[in-house]
Length: 264
View 1 (cartoon, rainbow, N blue to C red):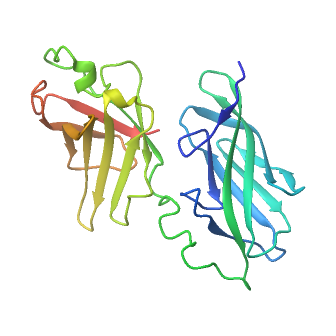
View 2 (view 1 turned 90 degrees about the vertical axis):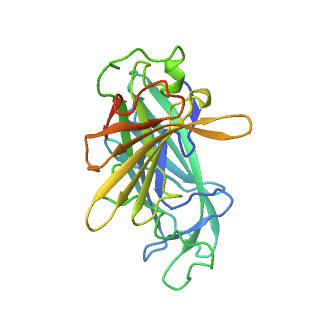
């Protein structure tokens, strides 16, 4: 079955170059010596098996180029020539094969400012240090219960355990907006709000790496922490085991819940 979809930051297509986070603030993209843009990116959802085809166009122009594919990654060289200092909109159209076996046509776009050696980036439009994920860290993790609960969970265990009792894995995606050079954050991407939200926060120092996994429930007026799990010897390339340190509602005893997290 084929169905159209619009890819956003949590959709199927990821754009790495040109950079960008906030659609209302286009960031600068460096052109080559001939004033051509080399666009690149990959899959932005763990359900994507591979790209089937990818094509790029610059909105409002006749520029339309077919790209190259390597599994879950794509690149499209030779977009141009472009005029430095001009704001453009890159539109990516692709077909992706997903885990269900379906092939889906998808599209996403990114506005950017074209710059070269003679036209520098305007203030406030630089991509910054966190525009890309550190290469040593996975973009995605998947998490699941390590073992069945030794004791019966509460009557609403599927909610208080943040969906851990449901079939399948929970996926976490790297959050570059809040991560720093020493603290890295991943957030769940496939959980409905009523189940609550998961956040993995890892801290790395010269002596150790440790991480905390927190489940929060979004109420009408507040955000409440339901569970907190910790891992004293976190391995970014995984797998790592997180042990329950605290359950706010007392439905599960501390130490009785173990969650496994590994790169997706």
